[in-house]
Length: 329
Ligand code: GDP
Image (cartoon, rainbow, N blue to C red):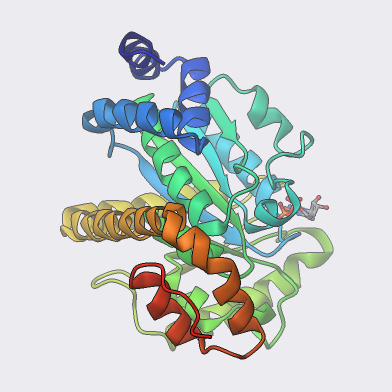
């Protein structure tokens, strides 16, 4: 892409053109060096127009009701005049090549909503890569005028941590049939939550949803508060009946407003920017290391020697880092 094309793309994104936004996101997802260069130039030009949205992370185990909730919540927001972008960080897509948002039947209404923009997770990259590109996609959405950005992730493994590092407010979805073990939600994940939403609080599930909410409130009460001056609420929602949706938005905006007013939002985002910098440094160094002829020459044999137990991983790493190294006979 020549400089003029990048400028055209930048202008398109700034004008809120969804096709330009989609193209820009494709560019940031690409690993081709020339694409990376154009993406970096575009991001740099757009940076002043970013930082303006309410960044929401939404996580929960498969089947908890994430897509049904985001559809109801998102439709509610766009009806209230917001412009909403939904991005996905999906560790399973890295493995299977599929994507949590790739399934066309998910969020059908929201996908047709002109005030909403839905983007599946880029496939074929490791979680770290997906998270990095999602961060850039989030900034692009902000530059395109989306004032609410949701980053969705499946609550398995490390993806919640990655998402919590991208957003202002982290929402954990919990199932109504949790039980005493709190549906296996790990303490560390619970500590990330700014808001807990118990889903499917309707019909036959209403009373178990109430119990689950009470259990969760008790568990949260035992945790150290994430921020000064504000606690983690638990809200009951039925996405199919539309109850509790407004309460979720009220709770999210309350957290966001509190963080902004107390300077904690600025601190949070500054910390995230710093973490991002180191993330880029780490992956950049790793790429350079992998691309070095000395590494490429020595790596296969050293890796095999480590696997066979002939060389310790520490020694092998030191040899590789110290200039390519060779295995002593
Ligand atoms: P995800 O895997 O977390 O995205 O979950 P889905 O949104 O696909 O929902 C999983 C299942 O739960 C589906 O069968 C939904 O119909 C059902 N479900 C989702 N939200 C609700 C709700 O508010 N009430 C009830 N009763 N069922 C729901």
